[in-house]
Length: 65
Image (cartoon, rainbow, N blue to C red; front, side, top):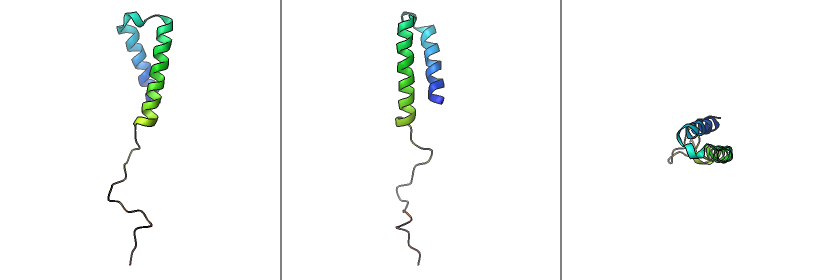
C-alpha cells in the first residue's frame, strides 16, 4: 500500500515539475511505470522485518542433554 502511495505522490510531482510529461498519454505511461516499479520494489526489493542471524541454529540442530 505504501508503494502505491509513493507512486501516486511521484506522479503528482512529475505532473507539476516536468511540463513535457503533462500529456494524457505520457502521464498514463508514467503512472503505469511508477505503479509497476513500486510493486516490484515492495515485493522483491524489500526483505522481511527481521533477518535470521547467521549463527542461529535450527531446532533440529539444537540438542539439549
